[in-house]
Image (cartoon, rainbow, N blue to C red; front, side, top):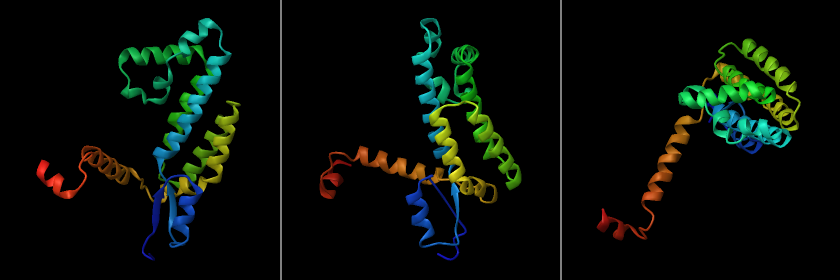
Length: 189
């Protein structure tokens, strides 16, 4: 345990404590995927609120845009990118939260801790201008777990390999559904 320098995990206090108790010397590194996933919930809630406030002509831009806002632009088809551009031009708040999504990811590309700190401070200042309760809560969460985000500069690790293995285990379990014992399994294979 003493040789463990850093551990990548989700931004959840129970996970942090489960690492700090046996390995107090280990640096906590928060995974980008979980950070972006949490921010995706903010984007989706802002989208819902904007839809509720919009007049009927504005609603046509927002309706059905969840996938567009949560996806990375390079993963969208040309027609989807055009629709996203229309949406972002029609709604300033959705445009702001969408742009902030890419800037949040850029923090994880920083390898210099002071540059990452400046980028995080700038991101939080810009995000505060969105003026949405869920955004304020997300900023508070970022500030609370800031140490693990900045630790990514020193230890560029994540949970992706583990998540991939977990997914393969789930697929195997799903494929094995219906095999009640090992003898029956051997007969079917």
